[in-house]
Length: 104
Image 1 (cartoon, rainbow, N blue to C red):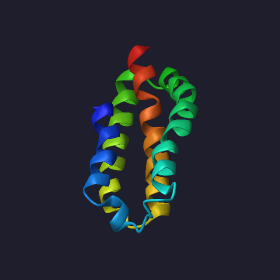
Image 2 (cartoon, rainbow, N blue to C red):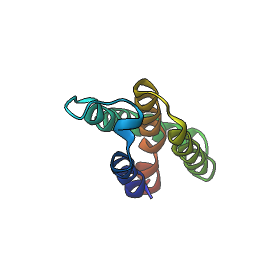
Image 3 (cartoon, rainbow, N blue to C red):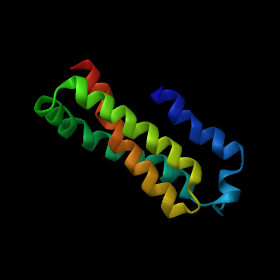
């Protein structure tokens, strides 16, 4: 599901994301929106695993998945470039603990 989520922003670009948010095709704003996800993803991995030890995995992993789903839905109502950056960063935080948590 995470790869489907990551490919959705590419589909949104093809469907007019840049036009809707007034992003210039020559600017790096779209690339910044893609890239902001990964630092937050990486930074959330270790704290998320620590939280999973504090709470049980049976509580923490579904909580992350619900947060991830809500944030994905919120991405559909973004009206500005700043909003897109905030939602992508929040998505990185929510998704950051999922893969290491499942591996743990």
